[in-house]
Image 1: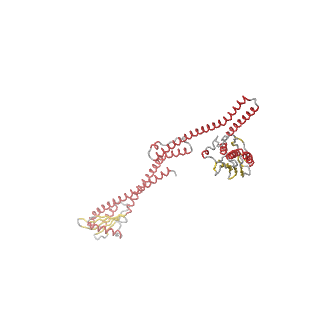
Image 2: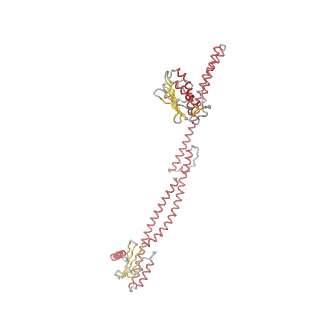
Image 3: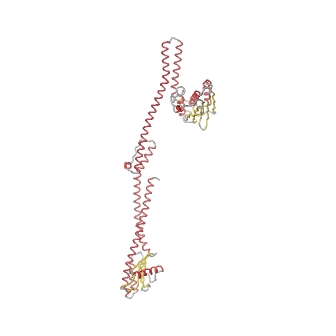
Amino acid sequence: MGYRLRMTLAFGLLALLSVVLLTLLLLTTSYREFKADRMMSVERMTSCFAGNIFWDMQAGGDPRRLAESVNRFASGIPAPTPPEVRVLDGLRHSQIGNRGILGPNAQTASELELLLARLDAGGANVATAETASGFVSAARVERDGLRLGSVWVDYPLVSLQGHFFSLFEAALGYGVSLLLVLLFLGWLLGRRLMRPIANLRQCMQRVGQGNLDVQCDLARNAVRSQDEIGDLARGFEEMLASLRDKQRMEQEMMRSERLAAIGQVAAGVAHEINNPLGGMLNAINTFKRHGDDPAVAESTLNLLERGLRQIQNTVQALLVQARVEAYPLGVADLDDLRTLVQAEVRKKGLTLEWQCLLTDRVALPSTAVRQILINLLLNAIEAAPQGGKVTMRCVPQDGQLQLRVEDNGPGIEPAQRSALFAPFFSGAGGHGLGLWVTNQTVQQLGGHIEIIDLPQGTAVSVCLPLGGEESGAAVSANAA
């Protein structure tokens, strides 16, 4: 349920409760005032009736005449049904009434006795008291000290209830109309209050999708207001401005980092190429001066060949994005690597522990995996001490090919760890592109590489997903 609908319903419920309470209060107050007014009116009419009927009773008390006076008086009292009216003689016996001459019931008779006793004790001419069924009014029929009897009127509560129901129907009609008006006003108020919040929510959604150039149509009044909605709108605009500044700074930093990386690579390439070029130029100058000597000519050609091959290796190491077709990796591809590094292993008197659990071809490009392993093995052989140990493990497990190369060398200095995968960084000679190329190739294959410090030496762990997006397709290769 939306906040706007909830706010409208809450306002409607509050309006309903207010209308109900107000209606009940008005009805209760009106009922009490109407009842008090009716009691006073009946009391005055009873007093007047007692004075008028005195002459009829003094003239002999003709029953027919008394009955006519009683009926006329009863019909003159405002009520849906005429109340019961009695004329009592001096002994308090019913002499005549508008409903026959039967005496009142026991409860009414008791209440009448109390009223008449109040009249006798207080000297008043008329008295009124509430009863369980309405109220009773009594008056003495006397003049100039001559008391002929009394009259009493039993006004039932049902007569008041009829008026109360009329009031209730009117109040209900006005209350329902007022409630409908309040609900409509609540809906308009909720719509007005929720408009800036709805605009803010839509703007947040667009910002959450990465569109920081969005122009938020926030109500100006909401932004200028000092309430919570104004604070929210101003806070969002400040946040959006900060995000835009942050995005601009990140873009500038990325451009700066790209330029710095390009400059670093260019400086490294220039350094790696200028060194052999300088030697080759010196050799050419020497050949120009002493070219007649066959030994000098052969030495010059050998120097030029080595310089050109060094330049070729440097350029090939940079071709990480070059695409070559590769077939799936098999056991024979890894056995070839073991044969290739044997010469370096024997030269340093190392022990090579080879643990390969690969039994069949897997969906990985052989050229790329071979390049990864040869770089790691050569680095491990170079880091291992004379007579040390190098271990290679290859395990296909959980949809991945896990490669791990270990050496028992001196390890990696903490200051060098952050620059291990940077181009042209080398801790022990070389052109410094081996680990950089290896890292680039691992990322292209969708894997990850991790450097692990051992109690003695270093381990490099590589995990390559089998059947990845780049597996079995054209992948990056190099000849570093």
